[in-house]
Image (cartoon, rainbow, N blue to C red; front, side, top):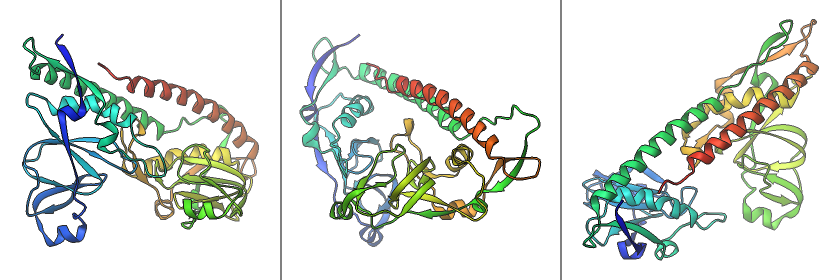
Length: 363
């Protein structure tokens, strides 16, 4: 194995912040062939008729949900817009793909958390990294490339594994131990009216209306967004994440409100003798299959969406057990819900172990 030398990031790279002039309007006025990378967008935000950069560089997102995410851009010509920083090599004989994999976990670790996560060059410039060197002290480019290939192979295997896990999450195990049980296929919209949350419930609004009633937003856990002095809903409801990690369903009980990042299923007059926990296990895999957008490895940097209109338009159905009279069998639903809960606990434990393995950093 090659010897290594310890270097600060600032000794290896200089930085340039992206140019905020690259708005949609500006790019439209300068339409051309060179891609503009801006904000959280890696892809075609726009194309302009000139290039600010003509050599490969690393670039990372400075704020937002993808803060700290490094991209390796190899285009022959491109531009960098706002909310993004370019890392330009100060030295020769370094492999940028190697440094992408080397620096990524360090960047994520140093993201400043808050209402808007952020990472700027000053936060990471003094971080020290190990660089392979040759016996004469020069950087060992071949060793870097070999390590980069190893990292890439591992990341590809991680990605395949996580994709299988995410695909498995979209499917449910259908339990039917009682061959005498009959089911009826019921459209979700027959039982519930999907509705979005309240757009006014921002952080500033909530801080101006501090109280004791919880507000829930787009978290997949029961984490409370804020507590305010009033509430919108009182009772037991199923809610789902509209954007971000979209489609995950959570049952909420009591007096509460929800932001525009969470939706709620309002029971219709047809929604009688149904167990909400059973319904949750039936609809969550459907909702996760229906999300639109980007799903990242380990659920990181996922941005998907499932709006109330999507649920209405898809008009999916679920199976509900019925008794001999054709009525919804509440007791059977509750029995099945307990079995599904046990299965979901086992699945989540397995998923957590897989995620832990895929988060291991190989040196």
